[in-house]
Length: 211
Ligand SMILES: N[C@@H](CCC(=O)N[C@@H](CS)C(=O)NCC(=O)O)C(=O)O
Image 1: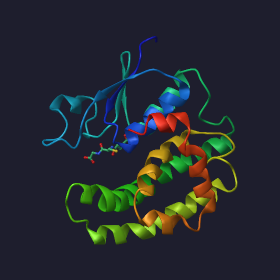
Image 2: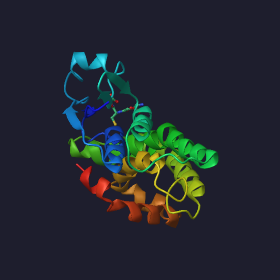
Image 3: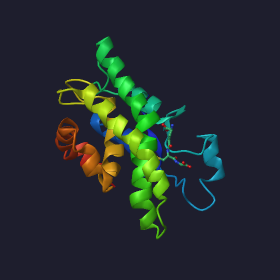
Image 4: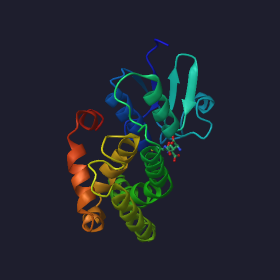
């Protein structure tokens, strides 16, 4: 299939950014069609045909339509040329998928929704953060950082010795989390995660998807 893929979403979304990072690392040109899920009234009604839950991203490649960031990232990795972002080795591949699942199930609700949104996005909108939500997110954020640091061990990347979809899934969540004042204290015990972030933060794909 020669068509250039189309990604529907907004650059502020962590999940849209994770897909953009994957496309960038694979060197795949694509079109980003803006869909703002937080617009008053929600996304356009016809968008629900692409993503019935009203979330972003959605993806189109020729006649193939897909939603759910993790599925899109795996598809992009498997269909396009460029460096493989999923290890061949069964154990390393399982670690990659384990990290992605931890990020979706525990990191997004705590690091992003519980801490970043309340501490950074809500005040930016001129509203008062819900302190209870921040406090409720801290135990899960703590457990999550400990788990990710443990899985990473001393390797340069989250799930082994090469960059994988696990790193690309994590980058947008960590980028937001770092903007919250809680990040410094919560990351203090995890020199390895801080070093991981420093290694990735000025990667071309990371810089070019920063906005
Ligand atoms: N499981 C979905 C999650 C996507 C998701 O939650 N996207 C957020 C933006 S980062 C969204 O659309 N939020 C809109 C809302 O919560 O109403 C995926 O992996 O694509």
